[in-house]
Image 1: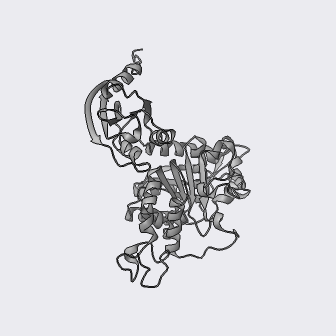
Image 2: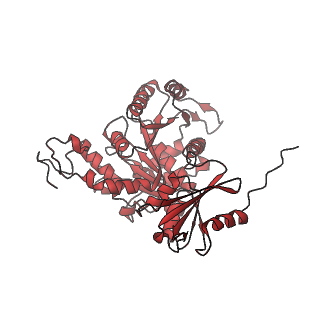
Image 3: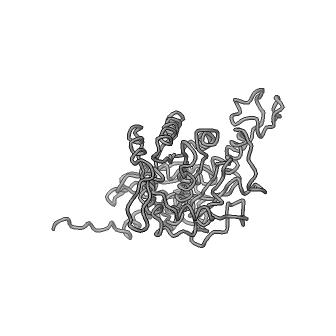
Length: 414
């Protein structure tokens, strides 16, 4: 590998090697050497949600942080990545300081969140949090890649990414680096905000970034004394904008002084969701996102089971790593209707669970499978079943079906 002939720092000469002025074949870019690490990281993350807005001041970071907290409290493993590099606020909202383990994005968190939430922000790298970050696009792009490749996130159900307002370098870098990301766009009912959100929608359409929908924040204020909802701005603007753009309208979130105060004090983690109108309004939005992003929705057919068995010399492999082939059994109405055998895919970290998930596998029957491998497979929503290598593969599947009968149907008659 050679240095850049143009004299630029290889780390910052450009997000796209082909766009680097003066570059020759063989010039080393961090993007080239980090592609494998990036691919491995993204394979371990089921869903990536980019929270963005057309303009500042709409409460985008509050929505991103609250969404991550809500998902983590439901037991999902969640990463929260703050790429608002010029105005990072995530750590301050959560009151996080002095990470115990920067490599794993692990802070001192309450017990109910310690195992389910990981957080990273440029602020952890700044000695003075009041210092301005004066960077151009290539440095921003590189830092976003480093957040993904150099932090050991581990298997995640959701990665929530808080982007800065507008359609600049950071959201573009996220879209280029994570092409399977989904966007949630935050706005307020004000027309000036809606005008900018239409630009965000156009941005997503032009770069083929999938949009989960629009969220209207600060939609109103509920009086704590009488309970009456008072609109702070005109109402219904975001819903009309979503309809016009043929984008889902996810819901409206009220202005909640408790959330504002808790975020300002760095105590958003301590705020009970049951006491907050904001978090209560966020709940159906989270329900909808969980349903839309169901990992089994597109790959698995309802009522159909697909079993995968690692084989060695035609029998269940004594160790998963010894498998020469995989046998697949498709089951409909409790009967095996199809069998297929393929060579074992390359043993790359997270590779086989990803392939099994893509093939629509619902159950893996295996012997000698370690806890880590089981965790990676179960992370894909695939059930792991212990099997006896002495029994024929088809017998193992039939025994499971016999020991786990289908649920009895309820009579529909009155």
